[in-house]
Length: 322
Image (cartoon, rainbow, N blue to C red; front, side, top):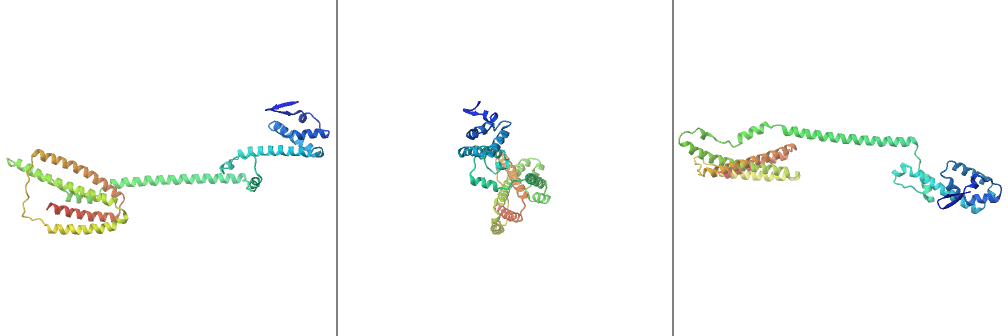
């Protein structure tokens, strides 16, 4: 009775119906051992048939030739390698170590695998718990960093909203004040006074533009300057400041001197004042932005450098105006 499997014919009658009595029957078993394993490996009673065959074979081993024993050994080795490969293909730990399923192992690799300690269920459970604990600690660390970043941003926003009343008073005291007394003048002199004060107003605005420009340049220099260069830059700024103060003292203004009057067409004067207003507005915004940036990261040496540079620039402006 022949049963086909692929292109091979497998004699299953001998294993299911035959009764082993003589030497030739055992020889037939030995010659088709490979067919037996392949035929019954996936069947319900395959293990039982194989066990029965091996039991009979070992009890009457003298009836089987050496050649058939070699065939039996090869077939069994092939079967063991197939089972071993299936088991290892489902071994998750082996995949985590980067090992691929092995269908036929060399002798040295078999010895190496035998030396590997097998993990018990408790050890695997402990390893899984350790992995979960590491993930939990990592999540807590990331959450703490996010909370710290949020608090830093909130502190920075609160700091930028704080109003420095002392600096505002100082700015109001030192700032240029537009004189509008000409509005009170009466009669035919009102137009002449209006023109004269408008020219003075323009000059004050020009000075304000120059002052804001210098202040913006000071802030930008102090912010961008490297921390290692602060000490050297302070020394240089102090020397420049002393020179500017000396120059200012040499050009002291004469109280009895009269201010020269410059006439300018009303249309041209109006355009100039409008231009100066735009410059003042733009420079003020840039100055405030840089000032807030410097306040966000307070540094005593940078503040000292800023004060020295401010005194130097004020002396230079006063000297130039005289």
